Amino acid sequence: MHNYLDFEKPIAELEGKIEELRHLSGSGEVNIADEVTKLQAKVDKLLAQTYSKLTPWQKTQVARHHDRPHAVDYISAWIEDFTPLAGDRAFAEDQAILGGIGRFRGRSVMVIGTEKGADTEARVKHNFGMARPEGYRKAQRLMTMADHFGLPVITLVDTPGAYPGVDAEARGQAEAIARSIETCLALKVPLISVIIGEGGSGGAIALATANTVLMLEHAIYSVISPEGCASILWRSGDMAQDAAAAMRLTAQDLMEFGIIDVVVPEPMGGAHRERDIVIDALEDAVDEALNAFQGMEGAMLKASRRDKYLAMGKTGLA
Amino acid sequence: MNWLKNIVRPKLRELVGGQKKDVPDNLWHKCRDCSQMIFHRELEKNQHVCQHCGHHMRLGAVARLKSIFDDGAYTTINPPDSPPDPLKFKDIKRYSDRLKDARSKNDTDDALTVAHGQLGGNPAVIAVLDFAFMGGSMGIAVGEGLLAAGQLAVEKGAPLVVFSSSGGARMQEGIHSLMQLARTTIAVDDVREAGLPYIVVLTDPTTGGVSASFAMLGDIAIAEPGAIIGFAGQRVIEQTIRETLPEGFQRAEYLHEHGMVDMVCHRHELRDTLARVIDLLMNKGGTDDEDASLPAVVDAAALEGPADSADADAGETAA
Image (cartoon, rainbow over all chains, first blue to last red):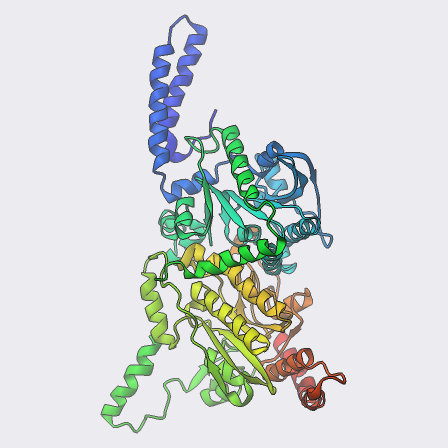
């Protein structure tokens, strides 16, 4: 049973019918195979139509879909011997950012990811993927450790943004993010980042100043949420759809701008429909990205990451 | 419509007779903090600090640079070209129009001004974010400007001093603005790797993407009294926690208390403080250093001046 988004209503109706027919056939002797096949074909067509031309606002909704695989899902599927590591050694353990060492396709890696949580309990535990300073400081600690032991770093980004709270401010949220970006830039090991859902502003780039940034087809990555942008520039949160479009926050836009390096296709109907397929596809893509840096010297890794970001100011200049 | 007043009206006056030419429009300013009226000459003389309550008003880039460089003398550099309006962004207004508007009001191309000169007898590069230019927001031009400032500091073997005043990233440049968090951090690292001091003076306000990048990475962080400094905006935080915020939250003094800045420094003592810090970090003394004796004298002079008056003023502001 799916959780349908508003714009998926026609699909929901068709799939509801299929479900009903199956239920009928279960109780009676009616042969419904033909009818189901027909309806399923309609569903597939409709899904293909809808998902081939999602608006930026629809993509925002897909990127935030509760059933979309989260960081924990990728980590548990990809990483053997995953050993979670906790705490920033200064204040606390922040469950909004998970991290640890493990083996990715045979090689030891450090994995760090913002986790939104799959159900209410988990969402509260992970603070809806909004990290506090201790989360970013934990990430810094783990990245520095990876650097020390020569382990590649994989980061999975899925966050509405850094947590806006009194405690977070008191402990230096801004500094924690800034320092995290600085740590990313200093690494002499490969840093591969994937925007798997929502790439929310400073809280995202804190973990995604990377050698290679991959992005799922329907993920978003932006300087502020469409709602936030709308309420500031349009003075109305209701204009979020317009803001989403104006900000150019889709993977396709960012690929065009040269901000990200790879767009990883999602299964028809989005990552939440075929979770295993997208988890496998992304694993291949991350593996490929890691292989590209095989044997590259540390200084080179750092320099090429730096050069990549320096070049971004020149895009659009004749 | 300030620019209209400033540009058009004097011309009209010239036609009428021109006797009033020397009289500015706003003779009196009202302090936002204590509501006392301040005569404009007093305000300028006092570096836009209210003489009644010590409130530090926002200072434009030119006034700032003049107040910090020796004899108020400096040379600005032209920042590299950056692509204007990369998203062709339009909200209720076109970004290109907003930019045009800001440029005509401010006489600068963007929010960051970069200059070099002498500070306390040492060469220094200073970059100033001006809140008057679209809220000091950071887009590609600010990123490029800061990178140029970092390179200039490295070329000149000079420290980089940044005055921040910004609401954060410039939303109208979308993801390109976010990338400036990484790019300005590179600028800071360039200065750091050259072994040169990177000093940030956080002024009102410093929030969002600017605080979450170069503004919070200073070797030494100095804040102006009363300045709002933080990551998230106060309204956003209030909406999130649904409580009123604690007294003095995100003010310079609050950050000092929480260990986020080295000192809160009154504007009148800023120049001497910067000169002293730079001198201490750059001219380390010892027998090999020929210049060691000269700056030591400057140090002593700088130390005597600020000690008592600065504390008194800062105390007033905090109260």
